[in-house]
Image 1: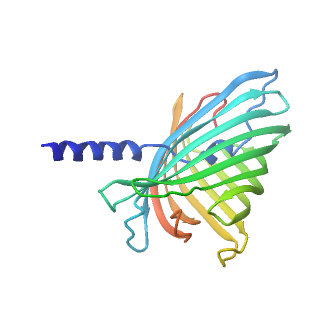
Image 2: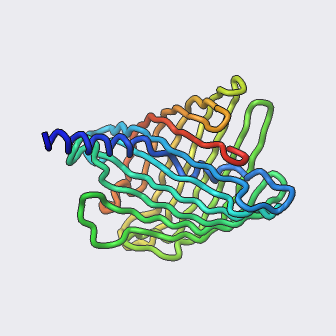
Length: 273
């Protein structure tokens, strides 16, 4: 009986992890709606979701991704905004139990921006740390980026386009061999009705390295497409896609690739996306 209760508790925990949201970058894809007067806390958005990882070869370390996080504009000073972001990204496998959260990423970010019409330019401080779950790791795996980001939003009828590009120097790192990074993000949406539409989303990132691990620059990418349903206070996206992830295991330093399918729930606080 105790074993059954423990198993139920573990499965319940796993299911809770699996419904935690997707992608911190989702909140940095388009310029925020500008205020006409200075405002405190004009926008807050949160996300939760999960997707399966369909590997070309069996690997018990990787079965599911889950995400939970949000972004808040602390202040809008008309010409720009000051924002913070936090994201938690566990990776689940099946090594020790059917749903085994074996590692996690923690992301923290602060930014300040300037608006120039439909374009927004931001200075960004970005922190990532990686951790193992139920496994020993006596050393840190983390890095800090100081960089810049450019965002632009465009509309044509029922179609919208959000572009983001950024890069920066890695000013501190532990265990990883990264020296600099650059990334880009593109989202295209096409409305079918006032509440239903299609979307396609692609991201790519490059990490320059210092040569200590006898490897060249590392490149990752993710593409997905699916259906978006908008409600008054939230939206849901159902999608499928493909990903190549840099250093998928925090210790092995090996890239991996997989197909994926999942869902994403998005709040629409403030101006929405």
